[in-house]
Length: 160
Image (cartoon, rainbow, N blue to C red):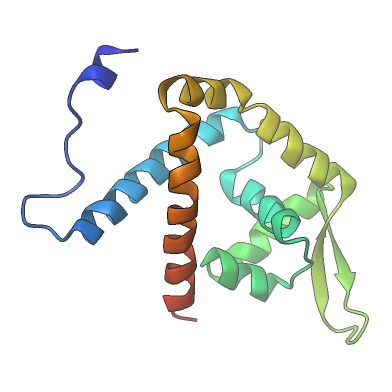
């Protein structure tokens, strides 16, 4: 363990801040650190945004339009169009016509996209091992449902 990890961590908020603000600040800091770490383990040329699209579609086992993806990822439609185009150029997704309305095209993950996603997760095994060595498994089991509850509430509260 490094010296920094043994030092008393600084609070995420200032004295007098609402606890909810401190928690959200902590989550934001964790997100930034995790995203940078994750980016360093992704295959060359793959961005976290591209991985997130693959992971989203596979996690929910869905095919979505670019508009639906943009909404889910909270980005502008042109930004999502660019991300999807790059994934399509790499053969990681394909655009398929909606069977009910051929004007609508849905984004579907290819077998290569699913394999790349799984390889990216596997590349994080050493990171997970380090986390497991420093944070007991029972802590992970306790915080995951609580973080999920926060995510669901925030997702339900977001503006379209």
